Image (cartoon, rainbow, N blue to C red; front, side, top):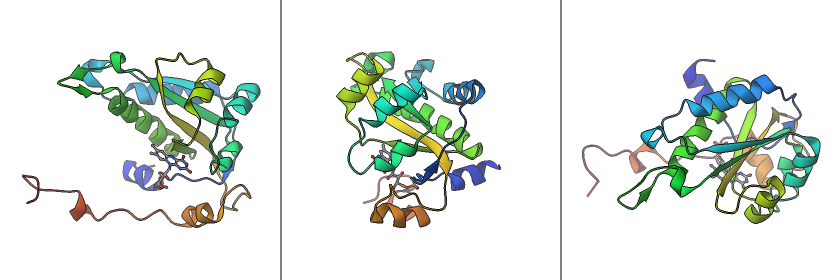
Amino acid sequence: MEFQQVIEARRAYRSLDPFPITPELIADLGRAASLSASCFNNQPWRFVFVHGAESLEALKGCLNPGNEWARDASMIVAVCSRPDLDCRTQGRDYYLFDSGMGTAFLILLATDRGLVAHPIAGYDEGKAKAVLGVPADLTLITLVIMGLHQPDLKPSLNEKQRAMEAERPARRAPAEFVFHDRWPA
Ligand SMILES: Cc1cc2nc3c(=O)[nH]c(=O)nc-3n(C[C@H](O)[C@H](O)[C@H](O)COP(=O)(O)O)c2cc1C
């Protein structure tokens, strides 16, 4: 896909079918994330690619109500980091920003491969960290839910989610967030 097409094709779809997980795919997703920029090249992101049947099932047990659709995931990428893995300068911590950048690269590569890679915040962090053995001092920033888009909507989607599937949620007009030369008066 052309790059602009990848950007346009990325959606947080929730109607998911299974797809085969290969070591090559995981290597490519990790490589894409690793090529992202990070403060002082600290690369603060840590990814747990969860695809084994038992681990995947246990992690799905940590989803919040409303995220039942994510039970159809073939793989879930747990994105973790810690403040001291990245720059802390003038009171600004960069670990979340840089991990988000790396995750965006991973998501865009998955999109280019025809996959859905949908980040979520709706899970029990403590429970998920325990299930995955993630040390307590790391933040589990997001779970990226991966599957193949199924246009015939799965029954796990609620009414609102069914509507969002058909059409991308509206975006703010650029005039609300694009400013020129200085902050608007
Ligand atoms: C940090 C973050 C947390 C999110 N959490 C959830 C979630 O818990 N459940 C869900 O269904 N979607 C979640 N989403 C997806 C957003 O709802 C979705 O990206 C947004 O509505 C825009 O739709 P689009 O990505 O299809 O353009 C999350 C997205 C992000 C970036």
